[in-house]
Image 1 (cartoon, rainbow, N blue to C red):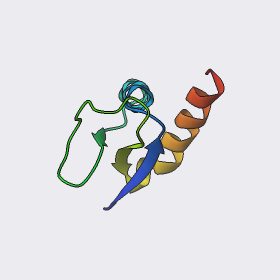
Image 2: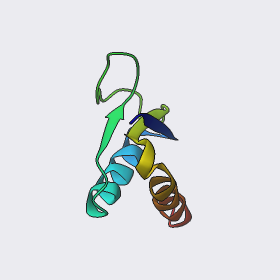
Image 3: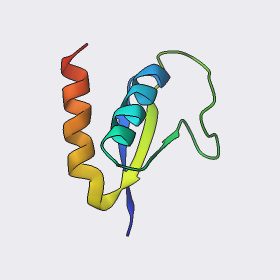
Amino acid sequence: MGTKIISCGSIIEAQALNNRLAEAGIVSVINDGPGDWVVHRVPNMIVNVMVREEDYDQAKAIYAKLSETD
């Protein structure tokens, strides 16, 4: 059981995705760099959201819907 990454355009987008995934029952972790967990830095910096491999397709679909509402 591995993990996959969804790259978001900002910490705000990553937190919104993380919330939507939690609502869908998908466990996720926000990571903005090696060994650097959820550090609030530059607002528009790429931030990764990690999900279990088996949840990846559903998580990507949720991310796509989130992006459409922007």
